[in-house]
Length: 425
Image (tube, rainbow, N blue to C red):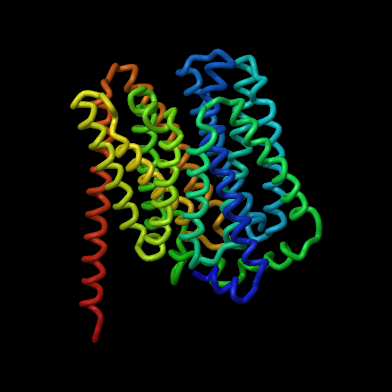
């Protein structure tokens, strides 16, 4: 890793830059995992009095607004040169955190559907602005060679904390934790963004170095937004998020599975799942550095296929004491694709395209896929489709994507061999 070289050379601003990026990315993802995805359900159903279906509609609206705002923000960052202006990006992020701190403090006092709806729109807008802005920091703070391990560190931190604390998915608990974390972040980011300081001055031009600015998959040729390479990665990542949500939304509504894993009263179970997230994130970081993206997608779809197959067998055998092995494999698959998602969009970008590429990648493949998956889950439930059949559909989709990626890997290898044989010796 280049990180160890920077430490030996005592290039402390660069070393601090690693920590700053991991902290911002992990905190943002933890906020989405806990406060938004889990806290909103409790807020809407318990405090506002909405049905679970109405809350799902609200979360789908949140996803759509976040996608639109992210796309507008990503294009604006690139068009107006803000993607290459570190101080400007820190100022935007500071504004996002201030808004999210206010939203976090006010969430537990919401009492009407109108207030809930307005809160969702503001929350979605803040996420939409923050998403591409956070990803665009990578060209200033993390060299290309270390993006896999850095993505692994952010993934491990976010998922471990999300599984260990809080164990009760209540909006009051989430609000206290997030407010306590955001208050010092507002002060630190405010100082870095608005006061002259040596750290930001030292890091401001880093994106101009080839080892930082030009992504791994943009060498030797740049990846264009409409190219096959970008669109195929977008389609595969869309499939990953769609499959994940399609299965997980049904699993967490099954008491036999949720209360023996992610909502278990045994803290040791939470610690174990968090530990699996950490281990698999580290493995994913190493694999990302050494393998092509097709092999990594193949691994992710294979893990999802195997995991859902275990759930299908367990359901058909009769739900009893649910084996802990199933959520552990699920956690591993989620960590793998999260590392891939964190690293692949910056590596398919240059400092001039990082804003829109990350907005399209994370917005469409992440949020839009989740929205569509939620809608499909609601439709399937309205048709009274049983749990076993539902999970069988999810497993079939996983295996379909696995097969398609396998064919793509084989075809790509054959085309490369054909080119090599056609070259003059």
